[in-house]
Length: 452
Image (tube, rainbow, N blue to C red; front, side):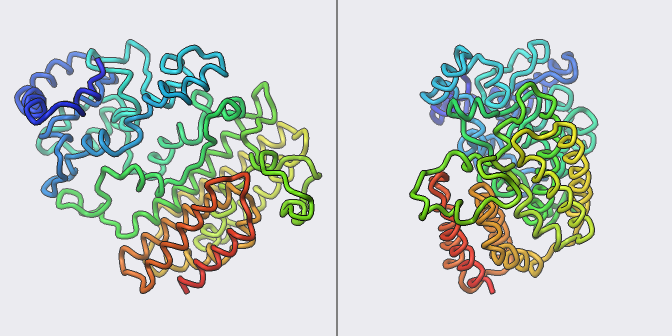
């Protein structure tokens, strides 16, 4: 039974009945039953759906959590529809091209489009078709589902019983990147992209905002230490560092694969771009510094924008990271890169990124720093735009995050103009194969002029 579809279609009487079924005393009974199950089982999002738990229609302010998390997820969050994508036209076509049978039963697809634990780890209430649901990120609930509702039961106690500590920005980013970057168990490679799967882009703060967030990022009476008026800047900077670190480690891991180099590690549009007369080609006008013409370059977009932040917050570690990335770019821009050299260089660069992630997670952020970063990144228009389409996309997301942080804490005098200029950056990325770095750089300079 597809419970999620029924929950959406029930009227007021049905919704009230659902609330009654899952309210206080019944939840207690369910909790007592669930405690007989092994810790680590997945129970499904229905166990969180009570209006007295996380299914409230409106957010509440008297508790440490909003209590409408389930409602936000089921109505607004695309993660709740991830499984449905497998049964659509594109999902079926990709599965057909890859000879996977039905996408909704293929382990390769379910790894990211649903929560697909082994049968022994599923409780009776678990339903594969719920998509990317609560426990995908928060971990199997059977160990802490009952106790975490008790008065005085702390977040730390839930973590000790198996809940993932998503308040830790590093762990939260790693959780997201499990699908939005990939690993040996979950991945999008060149074969999948060729079959029609979108290529992967990610920036923690932007993706969190679009989710939208269903958690409190400011101080609450029960957790006054959590208040952070520049939480989105911390999320962006630390998230970018972790993203770069994980991508470098993933690159090192991929050197052990049968197919090498894995083309999804390279700049897609270096090969897949609109063909133009030579005199109109910005790529040929720019040339191919550091590589032989015709050899596709490594996708360095996760460093191109982040390096600006890194140099601002920690110059010494940033220099070390730059050196490692430069070596890696040179190695990866060869037609047949040396696997061992790439793995060693990527791992060393990942260590530098990890050091920066720790410092950015604990750095002191204020509006002046956020505004300075906004000015600095938008001022590097030519370098970033010439880095290619994916570097441009990363810049657009980072500039959006910084602008929102600056404008929320103290409105800019020309907010509407800045917002329109940043929106124009995103508009230019709708057709990546037709990307024009000169136009993108000009719009970045317009952003820079507006925030001066």
